[in-house]
Each structure stands twice: as structure tokens, then as C-alpha cells.
Length: 304
Image (tube, rainbow, N blue to C red):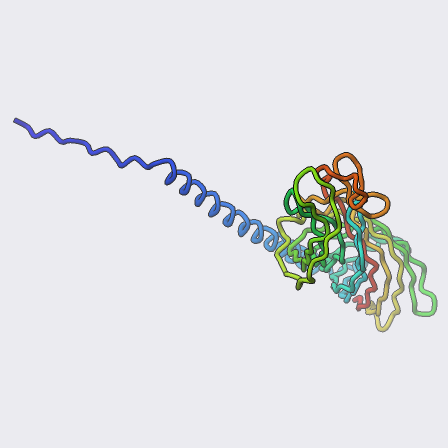
């Protein structure tokens, strides 16, 4: 008689093992997703630079095309849109530019290129730790962007070897790196839920540097306004100097919350009562953090 084969059933995992496996898989997927997002940011920035380089190389010999390189330090500051977090100090940042100008008349031109710059400043806000603790958090944010500007330039005719211009337009920025130095200290507390919030004193802590990519939106649209001058040297070669203001148009924070504050600057609970007055006994009033950056830029470079 033929031998019958008995199929062995796979071992059945218990509930704890299944949960652990699922949690481990989720953690691995999160890490892989974060790594892929970093690769996408850097690859997109590289493609933008390469594409602009190929375009400018092909058009650089044309009569009405001017190319240039410039250094562009800036003074960056934060702009609060939620009236809950407070910009504290502006910061000196650095950038550089690849310039591409197309003159379609003697006095009008379209300006574009690739701008690589750092932005961000120091801000303060209140953050909920648990039901009995609220921290004062200070962030020193540093964001790096690759931006493609599109501006309209109005130029004067040459006056004593110098041409003056004004420009306005928009920029399309891509965040390629974001870091933050965070200092968090306990400032408000209560003994138990339902009791009044009171001021607490805590020891100073050292700032901690953290990756801020997940908390920063990928795209940064902006408004650009500026003026400058070009001093002719030889042929099409000129020294250029300009001042421009670049203001972000959209919220830069992603999935960040802050505690709403009173006009006095004190945090409030869900009823609107200010901490420290003895009437604030509810949970802190949390809301979405909204803010953007702007910077004043000085650029010095060479056009050819």
C-alpha cells in the first residue's frame, strides 16, 4: 500500500510574539522611510543643480544671456503665524548662487538660476510633557534649501560703466537638510490633575542637537524683492552686488504642536485661563505650530 504523508502544521505564534513582530516591522519600515526621504531630498537637489548647469552651459554663448556666481550671506529670522511660539533672535546664515539672466530687451530681463542657502533662527514656545508638566522649549533651527527663483528684472542703461536694477518674483525651495539645537526646561507644573498650574524652577540643561527633517515641510515657496548694481569690467564680465529680501509664504513646520499663550505671554488652559493666576486648572490648550522664515540677503559675485 502507498505510504500516506502526514502534513505538519506550522507552529502557532502566541499573541505577544505577533505584537512584537508587528512592532519590529513597523519600526524597520519607519527607519527605511526616513532614509528614503533623505535620499529623495538630496537627489532632487542634485538633479536641480545638474539640470541648471546643462541649461546654462547650452545657452551661455548666446548674446542676451548672462551667467554668474555669487556668495550670499543672510540675516535670517522667524515669523510666527500661530501667535503662540515667539521668534527670539535672528541668525547669520550663509548661501551661494548660480545666476542665469536672460535679457529680452536692453532694460528688462528674466532672472533665474539655483540658490543654495541656510535659513532659520531661534524661537521659544511651550510644550506639553505630561498632564502635570509643561516645558519652555528653545529651538535654534538650521534649514538648508535648494531654490529655483523666477524674477523679473528692470534694468537701467549703463551709467558710467554701472547698471542698476530692481527685481521681484517668486522662489521654489526644496528642503535638503534640517537640524535643531533644542533646550527644554520644566517651567510649569501641578501636583495632580485638576489642580492649578504654578511656576516651577528647574536646572539649566545643555542644548541637544537633533535631526529636524521629519518636522520640516519639504517645499518652501517664497516671495523675493531686491535691488542691486553691476559694474562692467571687460566685455560681458561684471562685478555684481545686490540686496534682496526672501520671505517664505507657507508654514514650515510639520506635525508640531505648541501651547497657546495669553497676550501676556503666559500659557493658557483649555478654558482660556492663564497659568499662574490660580484659575487655570484644566489641560494645556494645545494647537498646531505655524511659522515661516524670512531673510535679508547680501550677494556679491561675478557676471560673465
